[in-house]
Amino acid sequence: MTDTLPTPRRGRPWSRRTRPGADLALAISLFLLETGWLVLDWMYGYGLDVWAAQGDRADIDAAALAHMGRLRTLLIATLVLAVLAAVFRARRTVIAHLLVALLAGGSLMAAQHDWDRGHTPPGCVRYSANC
Image (tube, one colour):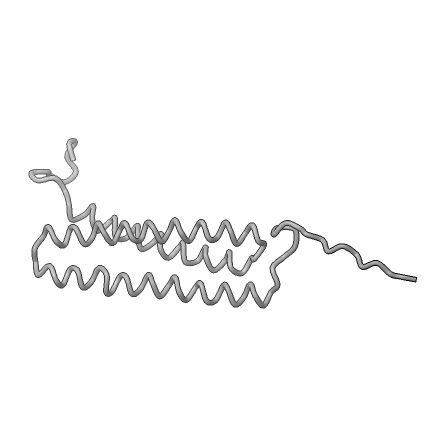
């Protein structure tokens, strides 16, 4: 007699877990890529822009704002990738993306804090009512 082959199940990506090997490989490679991008952008993107400004305050401010924009973009992209990894049930990749998001969020918070401390309104007395 003839045996019929079962029809392959076409499931949704979230119906089964991602293989552990693929999940781990993706998590490690994306973690290294995103962390490396963050460090290299801080050193070369922001650091060299400040160095090239040679004390010109307007150029330094423009470099700081551009760097904060790039950090914000990395933070959003990392969180979107973490959601996509969660949909595909790749938990190690989600953890790696959340760690990079924490790192990028902390860097963004530090950059914005430095920006706020260095840009008080002129003529403002610290701890007065109008500051």
